[in-house]
Image (cartoon, rainbow, N blue to C red; front, top):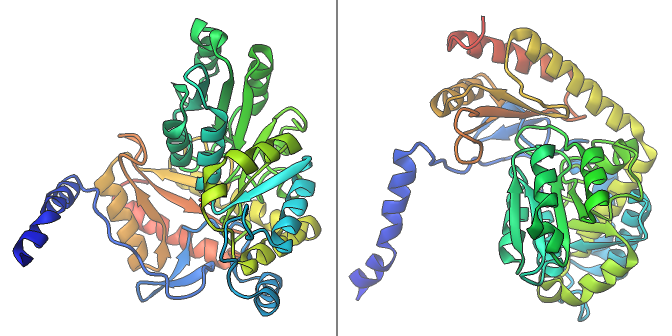
Length: 400
Ligand SMILES: *Cc1c(COP(=O)(O)O)cnc(C)c1O
C-alpha cells in the first residue's frame, strides 16, 4: 500500500527532471530579514535589487504602527468573506481612501492583485459574444482572467497599435457585445510603459472598455504615484484602473478603482470577492497609512526617481542593454539563460542580489537580470551594485 501511494505522484519527478534538463529549475531563496534595500538572503548580506518595495514602505514606522494598532483594536483576522460579515470599517475606509487617491467614484479591494484581475475579467466577460483584447506581455493574472472568462480573446503583439487597430476593426470585434481592452500600465519584466494615449483613443473610436493594470505604476508614476492614467493626464477616460497593494503600498492586496456601478456589480459577481475571506484588519490599516504617506510625503517618490535615473544612466554608460525601460524596473538583457544565471550568481557572491529571468518568463533571446531600485537605496548601495555589475560583466566578457 505504501509503495502504491508513493507512486501516485511519481510522474511529478519526471516533470521536475524535465525542468532541470531545460535549465528552468530553481529553488526558493530565503529572506532572513525584513524586505529592505540591504537584506540577508540565504545567509548572505546583499544589496537587494529584486523587490517591488519601491518606496521602502515595508518597514515604515507609520505602517507598522497602524498595523499594530489595528491588531489591538480589531484582532488578527476577519474570519469571513466580505459579503457575509467580513467587511470591517477599515476595509471601507481603505476603499474610500483609494478612490480619493485615484480620483474615481469608488474602489473595491480584493485579496491580491492577481485575484483582482481574475475577478474583473471573469465578471465582465460573461458571454461568447464578448471579446477580451490583451497585450501579449500582460501579467499572468490577466491571462488567467481571460481563461476564466466566457468570452473569446485576441492577443496583440506587445504595444503594437497597428495590430490593435486591426483587431478592433475586425468583424469579430465590431460584432461583439462588449469589448474589454486590457493592458499593463507598466510591464513587469521590461519596465516599459503602455502607450495609453493611443490605446484610449482607439478604445473611444471603437467603443472598447479600457482596463489598465497599474500594479507597477501605482506609487511610481504620476503625481504622488497615482499611476499611468495620471501620468498621461487621461483622468476620466480610462473606466477601469487596477492596482496592487502588494508592491509600492508594501502590504498585500489588489483593487479596482472605477465607477460606483462597477463596484456594485462586482459585489454580486466577483467570485474571489464572494467566496474568499477579506484581509486581516492590520493589512487594511497598513495600506491606509501607505496611501497617507503617498499623499503627504512626495520626497519618497522623488528619491525613487533620482535613484532610478542614476542607476539606469550608469548601466547604459557601462554598455549594458537595458531595453525600453522607462521606470525603476531595469532589465539587463544578456540574451542567454546560462549567462543570465552565471551573472546573477557572480553578483550574489559579491553581495548583490539581482534575479535572473529566462524563457518562458521572457521570450528566447531576451534572457536577463531584472533589477529594481527603490527609494530606500542609498547612493552607496547603488554605487556598490554598479561596481559589482561592471566587475562581473567584464569577467564574463559582456561589457568592455
Ligand atoms: C504583481 C502584479 C500583479 C499581481 O499583484 P499581487 O498583488 O502580487 O497579486 C498583477 N498585475 C501585474 C501587472 C503585476 O505586476
